[in-house]
Amino acid sequence: MSVRNDRIRRLASVAALAVWGAACQNAGESRVLGITATGTVSGLAYLDRNGNRVFDPGDTTLANLGVRLVAQGTRDTTARASSGAAGTFHFSGVPVGSYVLAVDTTSTLGDTIRVTRVDTSAVTLRPGDTLLVRIAVGYPQVSVAQARALAPGRKAFVVGVALNTRGIFGDTTVNLADSTGAMRMTAVRTVTVATGDSVRAFGTRASRDGQPTLNQVTVFTLAFDADTPIETITTGTAATADGGRLDAALVRLLNARVQDTATVQGNRSLTVNDATGALEVRLDSIAGFRAPALAGDTVGARLDVVGLLVPVGAANWRVKPRSPSDVVQR
Image (cartoon, rainbow, N blue to C red; front, side, top):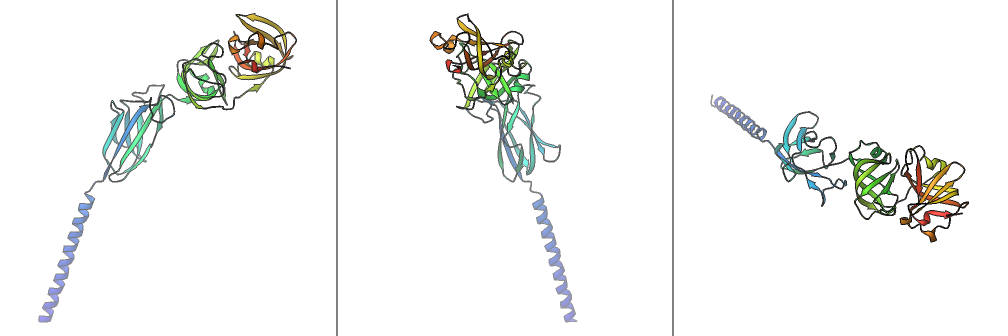
């Protein structure tokens, strides 16, 4: 009887320990599940004034830009914020997980400027993380062909190669080219722009002499001595800029015969023809074409000419060499 009682007591003790252990285990699980891990996302919104998509001196912070954290893979907004006067925004106590940073572009940006770069649009928060995100807002960067097609008054950045030095024709015009075409930049505010500079230009789409231009332009030089695109064409093609396709382009004419000469407002005007059609070549005195430099300024001379196509009236163009070295007598 004593042995049986001892066995019953031992079994009861084991059962009690099992119940106690299970209770402790469940209580621990409850405590772990009750902990909510969070992180922080902070950011800066700025107006990218030089178009390089990096926050640097000259850029200004942007207030009242709405931003949201959206749970990745869903449309659920976890948190909302708006940039303050200093351009900063802040999400605190964000549950750990993966999110997409969405920017509200309708309330403050309008239809011209846009978000051009978000450092990290997809963020993954771990416990205690503090992440920093920069949002660049600015004007679009477009090709020359796209800039020519913009509506008048629209602003944009255009990257290309300067085809002439500012001021060589006595004005502020600089022609710009990329692989899609060329266009004139008028009222160029940047004083130092040289032939062959690779540049990022910011301006407003306008028109002059019936052709699209980029007006009130600020130029940011990216590199020097870039390859300058030149297309070899006939005088007949140059006279119409190939139906306008080559407006503002730098072109080369070969073996063009001088048919006539004249002086127009102190500048020399040559009518040349390579048997495909007559074309005016304007030798600008400010570009260095003075009497001693006009070796080919004679009827019957044959010339090779490099110059810029400049519109004159409706559907007509002239060629303007940039310096005496652009005109070679055969």
